[in-house]
Image (cartoon, rainbow, N blue to C red; front, top):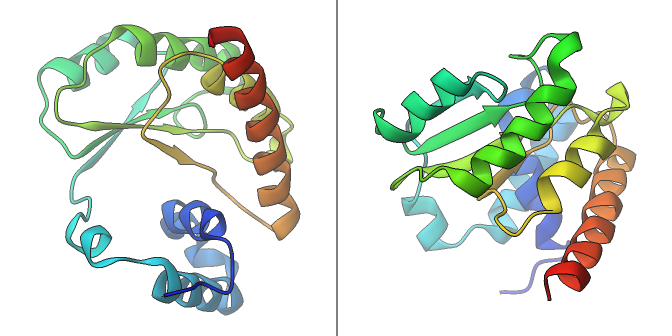
Length: 167
């Protein structure tokens, strides 16, 4: 079936669904609408039941999550789990963990900082410029379509540079 909106938007909004609960009925209605048009039967049976959020800068916790804990998704958090003074470290560590650690059967997510913080662009540049990319990206606290368009344009430009660099 053909979707009247790009599926990219549903992926972005769906991954941030829990963060969007407090932002109002309009966004929840949009989410339900895009999900109805863009969810396949395979996606419906592949629900994530256990998601472990780990501060990306905490080496010990990330290694434990990768090696000892069996969850559906390990989320390397660069946002709420990280104090303001360690955001740069968390960003670099998240990128390193993606390159170096084996998370077994767990998918790996990275929760970026919100666009409104001014840190999202740097997060995108660090996370998407490497050879190994996360399975899931969470863009929290989306306030408007402009936030999504900003993220999308940053991601596309970084991925283009990455492809040119890595071939």
